[in-house]
Image 1 (cartoon, one colour):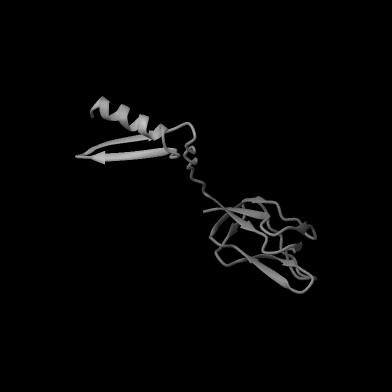
Image 2 (cartoon, rainbow, N blue to C red):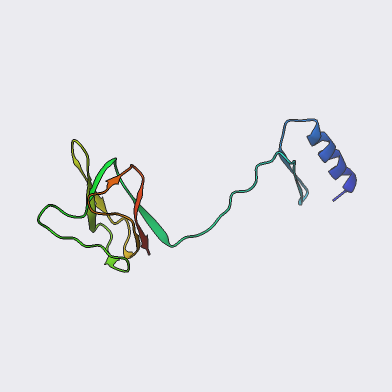
Length: 124
């Protein structure tokens, strides 16, 4: 790649409001980013799937008179009941979105929960 072209492209970029620029010609490619360019987001993989509260309310593991004890390390199947959140007007069922093992259990019987609050983490 011609260094003169690189200099011309970087000088031109300074005269614009662009934060980054990519130029490709005849198999050559140059990518220029200014200090204002946003950083690349971090990419990571995680084997845990969060199960979140579907509503604001009170978490219950089971109906009154019934017992459902969920412990870390316990296996669960996709679609299996993990409890429900009681709101003023209804009960919102919570089910396992994937099969695996419960690795983190933050849900506590009778505790208030917020919408989107992670209640369980399941490892596939």
